[in-house]
Length: 487
Ligand code: NAD
Image (cartoon, rainbow, N blue to C red; front, side, top):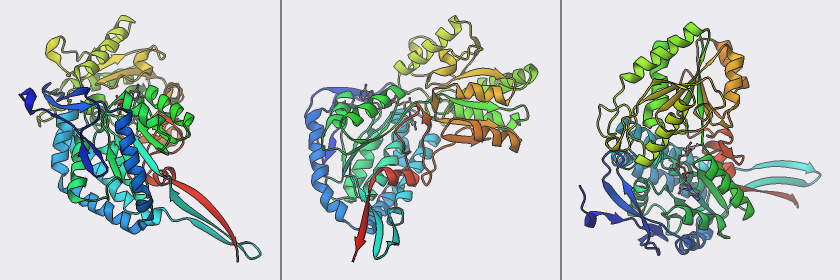
């Protein structure tokens, strides 16, 4: 165990140096598997945010004037630096957030891919032109950075999600402030240390401010921030979008999810069940693309067959520390999250839902651990069927056919992702046409982000228009200017 004196208070990174926050209040950052105290996180406020904004604003004119191919070279250097620290970053993600090492390395890899995608910025930022729109008159459109941009990120991908935003924002010529999750900010700290060690960017181009609500409020209200990228719960996303709009900022706010997995009568269960378990119980159900409602399509006998196959396979999973190679299901991010998930299971049970598999370990011994839990409900409007639990809890519902399945799926206020398991191309076409969600998987449980494509959900899973990554990131982080010329 660390002694209290070993435990560091994290520092902000502002204007090219690590600095103590002006505030003295802190939060504890603990290892979800052991409960061990790892760091104190300063709860930065207005003064800390203001310092970062000034540093970013001062750095903006020169960074904006840096040729795009030089900014792309900075991305290449960042890519190499992160690649060399892949294992270390993966280990930190496991220690701080709790997920298994394989999963952690996967997220670091996907974060690095966003850097790789941003290396293409000289191509991606090119404008358009049209010669001779009238006699002697030409029109061109150029893209320019929006200015100082901030990203506010959640706990569940503490390396990947900051890297959805930093590379594209900075490659487009903006200067950048990251406010990582206060629950697991250590991977972000390490990324910024690597940036500082290699002197990848001039001072002030990228900045890191720790904190929670006060830091976020100060960011949203600051007059000198031009755009906000946010990822987190739907209620926080709505608040961030509303407040950003009130202060005239461009905003993309990616929110929560309740993703459905539709299992058609012809699905190959030997292949589908492992993908479903990985989707629902991998990372302890704390992925924004986690499958959290299974929709078994077909007659009752087939629905029972799907339920029983899932139960048998889920029972065989091992719940434990993310660092243990034998672990399938890691701890949740903290005991408070586990208690909330268990409370929702208890409420569903009290309301008449059936416990197919009860993973509650119970009492003080559980820490942040909850084993796979499957709850069958026929109340399609219940919280179990409709609200995000963000834990290793899978709701099981039944649908007679594709139409009934789509009606259930589209009855959700969320639309982050959805998956279908089938051998029928026709079923996939119907599903793809009709389903209201931004990310779809066909015989894939987790339709994970691919950096060269836009990533986001629909409906309450996104406040704003533009998705993260891909061409949408360039669209979000640039302003278009149209010039009409006569010579
Ligand atoms: P969260 O909303 O609690 O926190 C996200 C960020 O907002 C953090 O940086 C936090 O400090 C800040 N924040 C939280 N409450 C705030 C408040 N009241 N005022 C100001 N700032 C506040 O989210 P979380 O629990 O860290 O992350 C899990 C959630 O994120 C889930 O709902 C998940 O579905 C969602 N998520 C969505 C996507 C997506 O792509 N749509 C991706 C990952 C996670």
